[in-house]
Image (cartoon, rainbow, N blue to C red; front, top):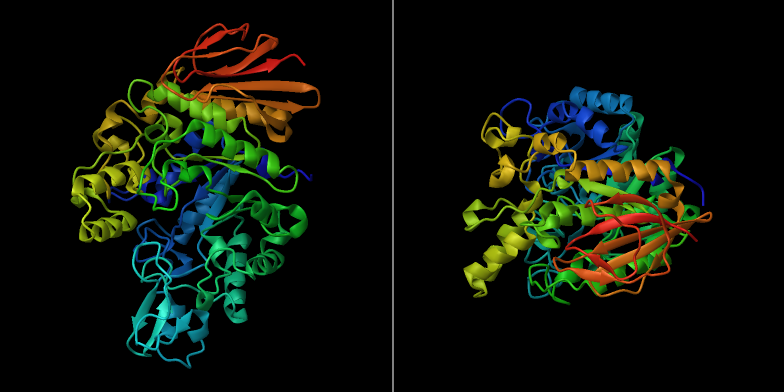
Length: 542
């Protein structure tokens, strides 16, 4: 398989609104990011995935774009963004733009024109349909944010499609002129020297709404190959697609280099393991570690050399992993290190979400008035009307709500965690006085330095990037695997629980301890007692 720069780096996601505020208005901004580039360089990352900074009315925190080639005023200016790209490059860090081409804001100039009349030149840039025979919605498509995915437009007496908010009308990818306008916009950003794109809900662009097909439509890969040929395919860039419905076979279609589509995709099979099958993400069930091992092993082995894995626990849509599957109490640091070691020594490109490297946790809310996330608010209203107990709904929001990931970055123990001198747009987690960057950097045994060492191991050891994967048969809550490459073997052992466990590998001969989350002496794994959340990687003799 041809080697690419993005296979050996670790990507760090910045959610600009919550990262660092430089001007005291309570909202993170581009200059705030620039001011923290040295911190990110110290961590060792090679790219920043920058959540949307385009002009937007912020119905969905920037994922509703009203101008693709302008910067949201509260984040700064285009000159600030040019400075960020340049200063990051000086530190060996590339900027990956988060791009939404499944839909725009209803305030985008294209849609403003499209809704003027049925014969407007921009009309066909979006998806329109006549009412059903009974005068109602065209069909049963539902919005991710609750309710019908169809919104009636009084002026033209037609419905337009919105798979998300009604202020996020879906683009019509069957329209060639629209596609070309998108490609021209992408080339505008490529010419600025960015490092690539993260493509939001890209698996939806092949939708065929009249047949109620949304994900993985029949022309999806045709569109992606055309996009590749018209834009990033001529450059050394990373492209990662958000694909909620991907299987390994589908992921190969996206990421096999011979198909000329994307570098990799985000697949979410592991993300749904603590949800009741066939129900919404809010309907909770305990995580089974055995199921998690099977999912990871499947993706590690089945992509083989026909595609590329992304590796992640967190992003702006997901709760904090330590609160979700670790232990955010007594074992916060130990479980955070275990989760990091387990993930980063797998095959694929790892992604760190801001604050993950210092062990940030979910922020508990007690009332819906404390919530800002549109998805959580819509779900709350829907379930209150359906008769769910308020306490049950709030519990689901505390476990799975998107605000958990979006609380401001915790820089130090001063007011508002050093994020802003003003009033933060979203309340800071009260635990910032103990969990913050300043404290992490001052403690040589902190989670930050575990992430830093994992990044160094990836840079310096081809086995981490190219090695084969083998899952070991162990007790359910022990997640142990081998990586092998060119005569070298690493063994990674993780106790995925807050209970002591025993692993018995008497034939393993340890040559070197590479990384661990404790200070135990590890010389033999014959009847070895693992402490709660214990994790280590060792080089072993073949």
